[in-house]
Length: 349
Image (tube, rainbow, N blue to C red):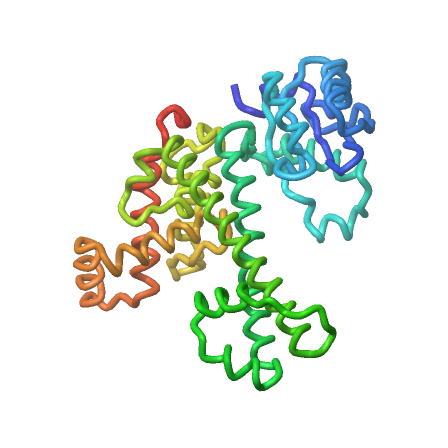
């Protein structure tokens, strides 16, 4: 039986998610709206929403908008209850111009996207070790950004400091500069030199604390990636950061990745058909998971600089007339194929 035939007698749900409430729509297999309702974003609300959908008959699939943000909790609950959940993209601007924008309209559109096949991607479950990696990566990115900002501030402050202070600090390398600023013992006065020394000391302390925080985060991320995917972590050019990027793209339930081609598509490492008329060509895929794509790029760059096999490949393709960006795109596809085989077996079909 076809998917449409299977859904014809089933109830299809659609949910437009928000921070405080979720708006749900129940449709029959042909897209006719049965009813709409709102539910709080709590454990009790999730149970009420699922019970409400099942009250209309046999529940088929549920399309949820924002499975990685406002809809994460609902998605986890539905998956735990054995409900098939599909990720729904936001309604296009063209559709909104024609039909307007309300939460009810978006919930109905989510259900109909499941029925007509526009929604076909299974969401990440976000309930395991990979989700722990994501949480650590968020904190790591924030700490790294704050550290860079503090370093820039300390450099700018040195350049505008009073001359006698500026002359002593401007030529110092960063480690010595930080140590010097940490050693300042300014007097409790409000003159410019004392105030500048207080500010420099505070910035140096902030950088030192962030260095310790980043070191701790790196240790935990390395331990997690090695535990989750030891083979992937041991691959040439793959470090804790790139391994994290690839594992975050795969998620805690990479059984949703059917094959190597779907993995390459997720990482935007596959060429996209762009043919028309007598012209047959492909274009670069600018979609996909950008963090995963960035991880592929960094692995390729490391291998191009250090791996003899990759160097020989680059030399051969260069003689064939390929440009460096074209060679990198080819290598990213090879690395995508390799890393798919290195994903943990228990996380794959």
